[in-house]
Image (spheres, rainbow, N blue to C red):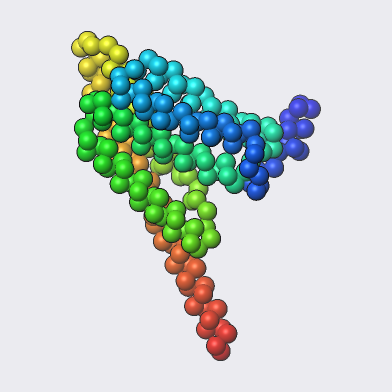
Length: 212
């Protein structure tokens, strides 16, 4: 009870302008692990890839817990987390394509979606907006893609009829995940356009008021 009271007083939900924090270091290490995972997958070292992927997944939860426990919620951390998720998905999908496990059209579709989101982030930054908050569809799409990627890596370790069925199920989950990924991108795009339009409307009203 005392710990909960102490924790609630110490923790501030507002993101601060701090950089060198334990959660941010963990997020950076997670980003560094992404090319290692991609390299292992592309060379069919799947057991090692699953181990590094598991460590990366655990660190994803740990950095959020530590950010609250140590009162180190930062604006940089809020940017690093979604960047790490997108890089992990993009690089893993690319590695699976290089390994011949998934078709290349899946890589192109995922890459185009991330390119669109990157352009939107830069566009919003020009109007002093940070990254948009993650919505449920985006979380669901990311989760389904990560389940698909993990299952596809796992299926490459063995060859038997049951694993072949799991491989097909993982591909189906990946297709659904890509669909949700794009739906989330569409929602983010509409939100971004609405923000920019509202800024424009506000500017027009201000100008009219001054002119009057």
